Image (cartoon, rainbow, N blue to C red; front, side):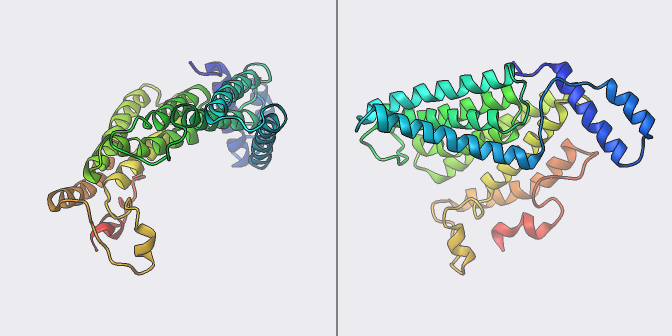
Length: 303
């Protein structure tokens, strides 16, 4: 399922560890040269700065190419026509990303990442235009528009699993935030649904990570697990996840409109249970969940 072979990623991980050890002075020059020959990797990588530049330039090139296509070949298309073409561009972008990885062996190079990101954007925009054109993109409990964020979450999860990009998993978590608004108008249920999705993901990732704790996949699963812990915290913190948070930061009153008193205090209790849960899950690590170190952060919802 991964776009890269296990041997290639293990070799790349070993090479990165080797560079860290050499930088810390744990290896002599002769040892470094000898061990470097044993960690030859076929994947092409680059530094973070060039990676960002290539990512941005690829986004600009793809966006300009799509815009030029509509200007030259499709004059004033209908919304459904635009959506169909965007879906086609989504497939082309993803296929090109797969080609860049399989043929050019690009790994965190920026180009294949931008192409994968474009495929998600084109897919969501294309579905919205093709299936729900003429209607505003606003959540309604009885609307079918939930298919758009659902599709975005699924393809983002696939890209994370296929290419190992942590921010693709973060994008899937953001898409999950939008879906419950189409299923229910109850703010309490929306928070519970989001927290339930994140908790289910956390249980799944923790189970898979336990089998790869000493493999190259451990770092990626560790980051995803941290994101899910933070997501659960934000989902049950009614103040941090409220839409009027910015207004309250500028001096507005703190309110919990739309939440029952029972639900409000139940989330308060759950927030205080999160740090012990993180400590129980990771007794050998420093907690990554917000508020695990400082109680004012944990209880900021209620002060």
